[in-house]
Length: 208
Image (cartoon, rainbow, N blue to C red; front, top):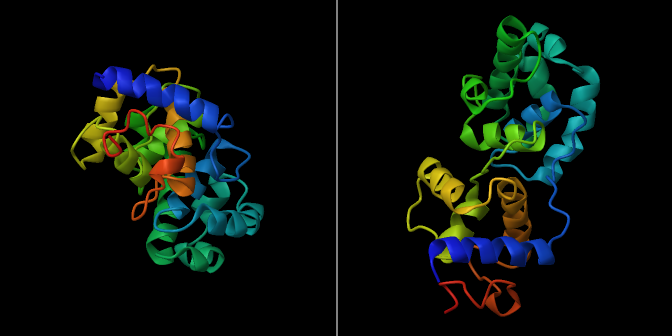
């Protein structure tokens, strides 16, 4: 099978195994997803979802985040880890949103990655989930599973993003990445993958 054929087969297999391709972070607007994704770095989505309600009740918009101090934000997010760095990024990010984007979350990867603490992974998530544009969210699950499938043999997230953009149907790419997260948690574990239970075992290079 070519890499293109493997990618298309993976799309279909994962679609059947995980029909509900949704982000596991809880949010109600673009800013909440942006902040929640920043909090999720080296932290579980479940923990972020526990912290988020009180945080967003206190800071409902970019303007309120921009007016506060990193120290106050830190009080709400200490259990998320790296809270000092994250709180500084969130306040600085909000200030830039207010100053340059009228308080609104931009809809392009180029503009999103100008925000403090926001990399391509988060930018792709926003572009895909909020603005419904083709996106490839390259997280640890994506890197690991697509490597095992034989779609690449590298670890550079940006290079992997563009490889997958060439291999995946644009209208499937965002959901594909969400399904990789679900599959990585349930089956394709980093240490002990359950290959016998994998929906892609017939064409996965690791299993063949």
